[in-house]
Length: 295
Image (cartoon, rainbow, N blue to C red; front, side, top):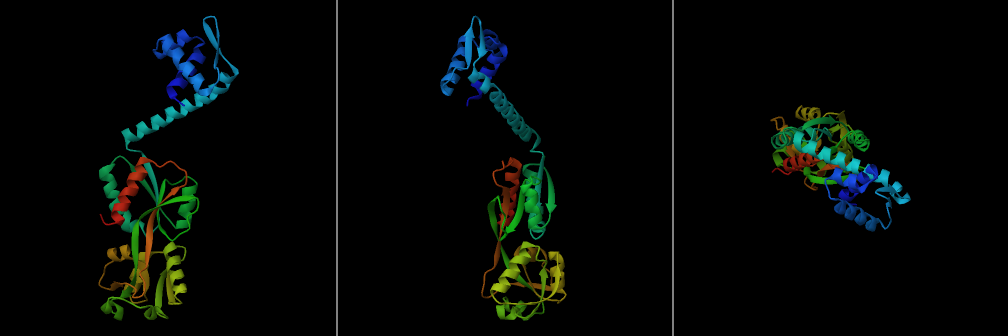
């Protein structure tokens, strides 16, 4: 419905006379009359009873009045919000990220965001996928940077790129020299794993179970950096993200692919389904996508 026609309707209803309403709107009376008639034709009802020099609302006009007022108030609030975003750099952006992605992607993404949108302040929350998914649904986060497979419900998923999974082995392990490792070498091998509360830990456990590979888990940790330190100390092997391997490239560790399988996870942006996406959030996700894809 045309906002200009609604403004004409409301001003006429408030003024009680076409001449006064036209003066308030800066229109000629014939122009205002034409706008009212257009609205009436559009709705298929008469909105005003004409009497003498004044007008009064019909039943249909009284039904329209509060709705028209509410529509214009909402439109005004929307326009104000958009102007504020353009003038103030979109304010604060609330981002959730899982710990197996955040330290390897977000620093570079945030640097790009500062260059492109310096006025936006980012509030970052790192936690398990399940916790962040709940905060997203409750409206406490604008967007979530996570990884699949994870069964996000009531959400829109946007793929940002893939991240290979590799096997971290001590530098002294035969696989380090061979440049790859087989499933047979993983069987009954001491392993260091992430807590299953991490979606990565759950993914790795699921893969090992499907392949009937049952490493001997000697230690679990909630921190990926700790897992890699334990591998370097020759405590055990671990399946880890390639982006983490690139960051923790130390002489004590080697990172090799599985010979029989190409393992990977999908890095995703997760949005609350049906929620309006802020321009700052879209810009930030673009930065994350560029980093994930190595651009």
